[in-house]
Image (spheres, rainbow, N blue to C red):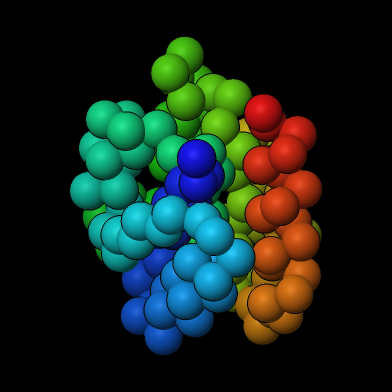
Length: 124
């Protein structure tokens, strides 16, 4: 059965590139651009991995990450933060909120796909 990757990203072009490449690797992909709506969908149907932007409309990626890692239903779900925020403080905030990995934009697809594969294998 194919694993599901949920992408929370408000940049349509980035989301489409990620979605296209993940689908080509055999993953089911769900995409949402609004933080609050994404959180509700994730709680209802927990994906195998979450790729999360930090700067989102509605609710920040840090808040989403913190909520998910403090929820018994989603606390073991791997989270990769994918963001344009490159300050040390942003990285520390993401990791402190519970993120399993932190990737800054611009990124290489090869790197993202390798990290997705690694975290999904670990979480099984």
